[in-house]
Image (cartoon, rainbow, N blue to C red; front, side):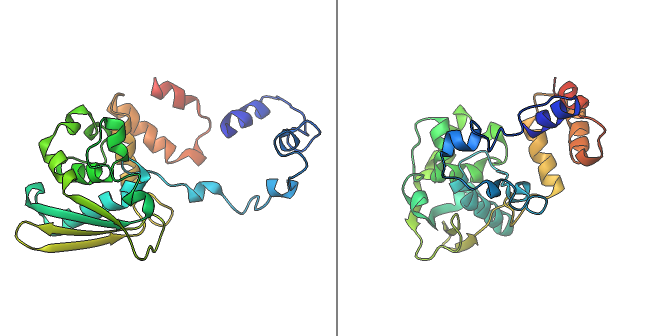
Length: 236
């Protein structure tokens, strides 16, 4: 990793200067003569890949995130219950309507790839919590019943690759609609500090809460830390 390489360099560790573009370097070994070494430094100091990283807010396949986000938005706005839902229609891309359209997943891993299951779970459990996606969820009649009521079609127009348009019909006849083009965690809609903290603490619940809260505070202030020795100690 970059952190390890920086640490080794600071301790005086050296290596061949031609490791990338030399005769037996990375470029020639993997690309032959078909490479442009200027790409190695293009945008150096100006373009940072870390600014284009997507953080998954929900522990499920990325194709389900816009639909799950839409459900959370609708529930917050209209305050309806899972048993109030008559049907759910989702318009999305071809992969959503095909590969990830799995109404009855066989196991929990497949369930995390299933948009109908994830949409059903978002009505019954907290979809942000990894522990919501367990074996009991597969047998939860409320989740499985809702998954069967989800229909997915290919959208006529797709404003962004993962956009989803939700049309939800309630038992009383009301029709609720919500379109999501960018979900929380994308560069277009990054997670706020409180949401990052929430995700971090959910993923580290097996550790002492006080230690993890301190670690998050220090990680959020990483550029001002004198060293990273505390990182390994706190994670033990």
